[in-house]
Image (cartoon, rainbow over the protein chains, first blue to last red):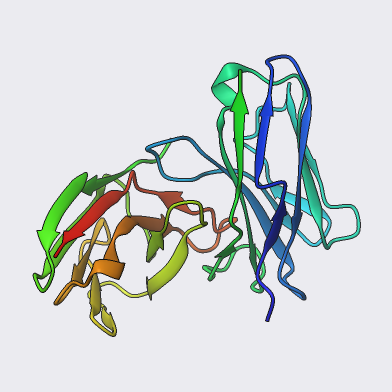
Length: 116
Length: 112
C-alpha cells in the first residue's frame, strides 16, 4: 500500500512570496490533515478535511493560509504572502476513520519550507 | 491551546539500556498515542491506547494510559542504535473532530 505522498520535499522562498504544497493521501482514506511543525516542536494541526468538507480549521491563519480538497482525494495548502515565522515542516496525514473517532493517522514525509 | 508536557526533553543512553519517557497534561484525554519521527520523515505511530489503565506492548516498546487520563508513559527495553529519533506523545478526545494534540518530543540518542 502506497503511503501519503507530498511534494515538494523542500522549498525556499522570500518573505511576501506565495507557495503551495500538495498532498495525496492513502487511497480510500476519507480524512486528511495538514499540520505545521516548527523546529523543536510537535506537529500542530492546521486543518482537517473529511472527504471534501472542512471539519476543523480553527488553527489555520486564514488571512494568509488556505487549503482545499476539491474532489475529496488530494489536497493543496497555500500560503500567500509568506512570513518568516512560516518556516516549518508542513506535514500531511490521512486516516481511514471518520472524523470524530480516534484514529490512526498516517503521515507523509513533509515539505520543509524556509522563508528568507 | 492544549499542551502536553513531555519529559525528558532529550536523553543519551547506551545500547542495551532501558528507556522511559512520559507525557502529562492538565486536561483529560481518552486516547493516547506514541509516535516516532526520524530526520526528514513524518511521525510513525508506535502504540495507541484507548482505555485508562491500559498497558500495551509492541515488541520492545511498552506504553501505558494513565489511570487519571492525564498522562501516559513509554518504555523501550534493551535499546538499539535504530531507536534513535524523536518520540512524540499525542492525545485526543473522541466525539469531537478527533484533533490530535502533540507533545514537544523526547530526543533519544543511543551510543554504542
